[in-house]
Length: 228
Image (cartoon, rainbow, N blue to C red):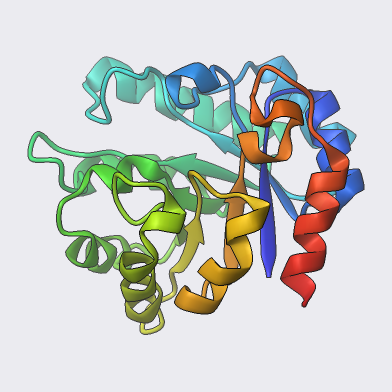
């Protein structure tokens, strides 16, 4: 089982690694759903931990539709992230019908080279997720989709997540469950879905809020659950 933790600072990253996280998603502006962090932070975290660091590439929180100016910024960010030595990026793009924007996605992937790729929770804006998974799976660079199975929190979407996990078995895609995850709901969700990767944010922080530091004991407890 793979445990991914959201980090917003070098202190977060070091604490998450020390507590047993397998991978980090590095973000800024979590009050806006996560935006691209500064280059200085990316460099500090990549140099400060040994586990893989995946950096979100999202220039604004208004929508998951991007114009040429947005795309230019995203391509530049990917170049900088790659040069900084990050293991991967977290990206996503939708068209005006809230379907996967394959043209924009292709351009971002062409810039990413051999970095690991996660399609982010733009996926949860898509009505037909099984169809979207098929589309995303046509891009061999993409290893996983971060999703809660729709608009509801992941623990409330076990049926949909199981459909996505089952569908993904015929592809190179892993389903990474996130949003609304908690240590208490983790074991039943894994049993019900067959998930192999999970993603935690506020639930591993003091008071379960991004306003507070990471609680290493919670991450350790989650790791113990995943090893059972």
